[in-house]
Image (tube, rainbow, N blue to C red; front, side, top):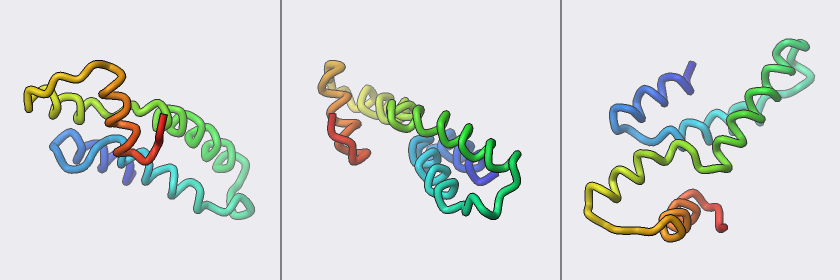
Length: 92
């Protein structure tokens, strides 16, 4: 539910979807597997896998690309990827 709210806020310009994904991954990591039933356990790892791949690929950074374009900054794909990777703490 918090992830959905964070996505909605990102669409309004408050934070990014990438930040929402990172928060969800952190919350999923904090869940103790021993406290989960089988359905919750499977849902945790399925969701963590999907959101984790999306996060690692840098999806959810459409907002950053739009801001760069609005500012009139011309970046090629390699420069944009580098900029995104450095702001997310991931070096490519």
